[in-house]
Length: 298
Image 1 (cartoon, one colour):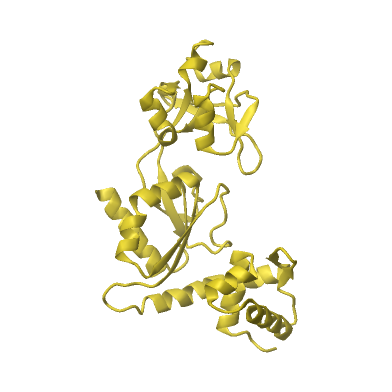
Image 2: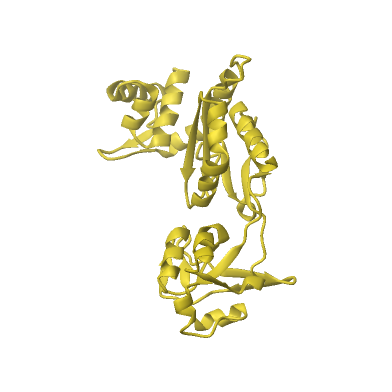
């Protein structure tokens, strides 16, 4: 059996990552036809089909998924080795891929990314805003970004931002039509704007006070999967929303929203950047973490 070249393996991983021959060809600087020819040659040499192809999409076969799972760490190690050969001027090269939720990516763009790109202009930073908590290793990411409570336990976590709290908020107009809730159980008598999780389930609102924790499956006929949209719905008087405070801060300051049950909404550990501890940490990720720590210190 003829072994594939490093270039062929790299091309295969890029195709699966992009789910597109065209996009992978653009990134690799080759033609789509030559890329397709290379993959067909690799499949022929290995004696297995690695990709399912249709006119609209491409996806790995079970054999392709197994191969990708084995080679991704190796390809990453290769890239890191070459990146660390950068000149002593500190101009690291390479690609850093981070998967985070929308709020986390928004925070990085404001607090970390400008300084990082200015210091390391040769690094390609690929940020993916994803509502789903993906397996960053299987999906080929160098790191993930989520609230501390959502970070998998087998990961190394680096605090990124300050503590954050979720707030129950509603418009003054809505609150003028019904009794203001005093305890979380009162929410069962209100219209609530529910959050649909990526799994399809509805999020149960979580509250705590003086060591007592409560979870409420709130009622409501409107469900959304985006915090910004939930805030907008609350401003329109459609009910009570439960969102991270930064999303509602401007509306609270302007008087378009009011917080309820604040004494039941304590701050929680905030965003964390996380990565697998059993793997070599890429130089690009170490540099990103250093910039994060500098931002926190400021």
